[in-house]
Image (cartoon, rainbow, N blue to C red; front, side):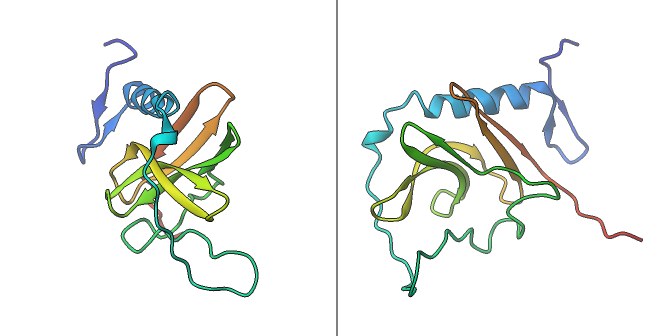
Length: 142
């Protein structure tokens, strides 16, 4: 068996290097797309007296935005903030770009993960985007 083969766990989830390669290539493809043509998004937010209301993941996703250790969801590239965020209309985690003037996140794709209970860690190294996505089972200490 070569190092790029994948194996399935008991619950049918794919594991192995192939998953990471696929995710890395998929996310790197996001930056080869012309994201300037992304459709405008109407953004409505609750009025606050100072600052801006933050992004809301919604109730359909995992209730903790990161796992036990800090995981990065945002990165800076080409003058924009980018993020791995849940897109409720697509029912998937997708790449979003932040619009500073409207204070809105716009989904620009591609899809990162369609598992609502997954967590991800993103790293932009200046040339490539790496995203590691996983499911975590939290257990109580006994």
